[in-house]
Image (cartoon, rainbow, N blue to C red; front, side, top):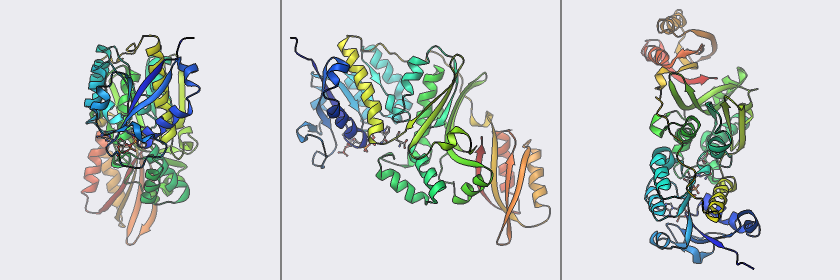
Length: 428
Ligand SMILES: NC(=O)C1=CN([C@@H]2O[C@H](COP(=O)(O)OP(=O)(O)OC[C@H]3O[C@@H](n4cnc5c(N)ncnc54)[C@H](OP(=O)(O)O)[C@@H]3O)[C@@H](O)[C@H]2O)C=CC1
Ligand SMILES: N[C@@H](CC=O)C(=O)O
């Protein structure tokens, strides 16, 4: 009987995701020969600190030297789960140039250098797969690249960051403070090494750049994405949203329009009966519209040890199958168009604006006049509370050009009776 082949894998990183991948390979040990036609063994794990206690990981495979991996000809798959741009970019480049296949969960890197790395992979006949880089455990990259490849995709939008969705859920349903919810998300392994990336919308922006590039077959990098986070959202905004029958979510929106691609991430008030309003905790959801498939929705855990490891593991198994059939490097970069990308100021949105003004006759009229002069039409005004000697106003606009709203906002801010623009949130 022919001896079963054993494919050697190196992990770069054994934090939340790396540990999950290591454990899944162990858990699947008996199944893998049937699924892949070969066994998989993690023969090396690169870390910064070899002396750190790592539960479930065989200490003999740990190394803090990249050279141990890049010079090991038996390693055929390198799994990058360290995060950040450098040294991840250099290690992935060197691995591909050495003929090793790469799986990565690194959205920071793929959102900026994805095109260049995919070209290096193609040039060297290697696989470079990155399913876990968007929406954690949800299959979305493979569906876009493969299952939906027969479509002209016009829209991909949804909730693509687990940490912020967890925080907003806790603030909305349990009245938890922002900082407490963020600490819990970090403890659960959802947040990035620097959680600023989550709460300021950068992580979601990176995922939208990757997803838009694949959906629209045209390269979009992180710099092209307008991002706003959730740090300005207060318990009061959540209450106002509830009173309006809405929920606040951090949404990523990518559209392929006749005048160019729009890609943005910002908080949004969405009707509480909208399917995205019921996506809670670390769950993510992505809607895709294609000319043939019509609407499709993808839902699942967007972060965390095993959900993310599940996506990485799917890629590893795919690569291992390709190795078995001598067909690595068959999935190329699919950005063959060069579509223009619209600026945020060229996009139309509806707005919710909460502000504090002097409680004097004529103030509301002046604000309405300023909005009108800037072609911002008002859909609704709620004069809610008296706060000390001031009036708190909430204005909802119709669909307006972002530039016009921004101009009106500058004028309103400068008006003598405006005390504070408390919050500005877009409305679905
Ligand atoms: N956590 C999640 O839910 C998700 C994460 N991702 C992505 O997966 C990647 C990993 O995330 P996560 O596991 O949470 O991160 P962690 O911070 O938990 O783990 C990072 C690991 O990488 C190692 N590492 C970092 N820099 C170096 C370096 N220069 N040399 C050697 N080893 C290094 C660390 O070593 P040491 O242990 O010694 O410090 C650690 O083991 C990131 O790209 C992240 O964006 C993607 C989807 C979901
Ligand atoms: N920090 C990210 C992890 C997965 O990508 C998130 O919270 O979604």
